[in-house]
Length: 169
Image (cartoon, rainbow, N blue to C red; front, side, top):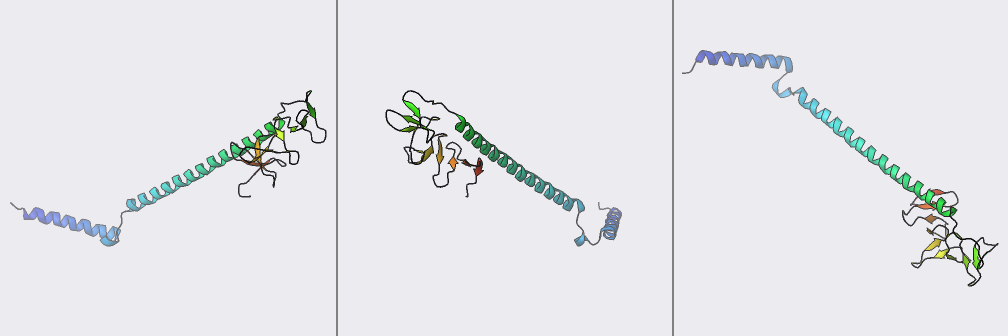
């Protein structure tokens, strides 16, 4: 059976709750739950912070790796320039004018650091693939600028200032 009194009491309680909510929070179409917007805002801020830190970390690691590669290339060039395996002997005589050794049998200039025959006009060796190589370091050389390029890492160094040359120059 339908209890009309019970229905009337529940209906009255519902109306009172609605009137008190409207009085405290405004009309129903203007109400918006604060936790919903606050949660979205906090989530957006956290996501933006994570993305920013990720980009910053990637940039830092990339810069450190590039710096380490360039430092390694300069140290490798310095070590290659300091090595000196050949010395004068009975058929290798030091050429006073160039600082290289002259092979008495063939008349060629020989670099004392690498043992490669040296072109007397440029002081460089041409590799079989057509590139110029500095015989002291085994690095590729650009005859126009004098810059040396490490064949293993591709880093270009100015041998005068011992600084890495940027790729766009």
